[in-house]
Amino acid sequence: MRLPYFKNRRYLSGIDWLIGAMDHHSRMSTSVGNHSTLIVELSSAISAEALRERLASLHERLPELTGRVARDIFNLAPYWKTAKSAPPPPVKQVDVPDQAAFRGLLDKTLNRPFKDRRGHIRFLIAKREYAGDALLMTFDHKLLDARGAELFLNLLSGDELTALESATAASVPSSPELHHWTAQFEAGRAVQRKLIAASKEECFGAKHAEVTAGEQQPESTLHAEFAKFNPDTTEKISLAAEKHAGFMMQTPFLLALAATAFQRAAAPGKQIKLFVPVPIDTRPRSPAPEILLFNHISFVFFHFDVGPDIPLEKVCREIRGQLMGAMAEEFPSAMELGTRPLRIFPRPLLARAMNLPFNGDVCSLAFANVGKCSGPGEILSVPVESVRHMPRTPSPPGIGVFFNHDSGSLRATITADSKMFGTDFPGKMLDSLRRTIDDTLHII
Image 1: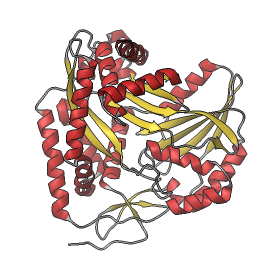
Image 2: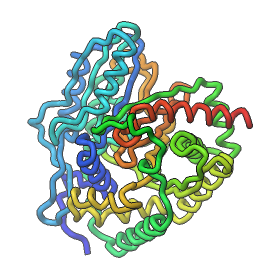
Image 3: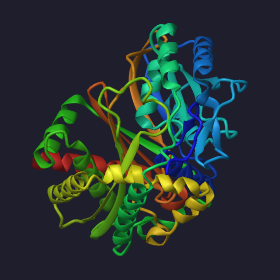
Image 4: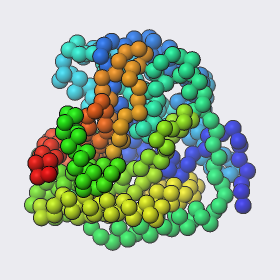
């Protein structure tokens, strides 16, 4: 049975709805939604007025930038309702005298919520006296995933006509997929069985971590730490990943590094079992312009042991084996298909259900490998020097490790919730990650 729908509407996928529930869950636990920031470092100054003009033009072609969720009264499917009368995304500018002030600005950006339900993207130009400008693009994951945000930067590059054509191509309707119900429910049961099986085993979470009570804060405040690995080290990491995980299999190796570093920082000397959901980008390698907005990801779940007596190579092989098994079972496709029926449930209800796995721990840590940057080499004719990701980590788990590859260098971002892990843990975790990488490359 196929239900009727409006062919001019942008209906949300099951993954979109799940991400929306995660956003609601984050607001419940930290008062700030599920958003991320791209930190784009430029070689010189960028014009705030030119950026406002480009965004205003894009917003006319891409009204989804200030849309909101609504339900179709005929079939109850959620869709993205636009309003062309809404103002375009805001652009602000602030003077930054030194690096310490810039780091403080990053923390404020990380912990600053969007002011209303139509706010999904905003820009802040940091006029750094000691370097070129930095453009901070904060985006709501209900509107853009990590790679989509990088692709959005391309709309700010090149001539305006080309950007407007790409924006028009991205603003396309989509079907609610209100058919093949048996396949959807079967896929949902497959995902449910996976989660139930995992929940019968342990999951190391924040409440098990060794954190000094005096470091913890009464309110949730996230802090980020960053690492950049030079091209030589990046090449060595790539070769090690190929050796232990296989060709084009860097994600299992990076997850093994992050998991080992987490164990050393949070549970030194102990063997622990981690449960980690990892997003998998479902776009083709060269996505068409319309594959820009909303979420084009699925998930794979990893459940494995890590400890002082378990070599990193063994952890990597276990993760690789689970990934290959998930791909053979077409689990990412099942996840996409099986989440569609969840759209009938209100997001607050799904958000509360997220507290059920592992007695509220949800998972051990957030992890993502965005891969090679899909952004442009310049923005409004100003050369781009680097692009970093600064995601908010959901709480729980309250800790996240995120990788991206830009300008020949591997970059890592660690964000942690001071209420759950303490103020010093992000730096401690970053030191542990560096030592783990150094130890691994030294052995190899």
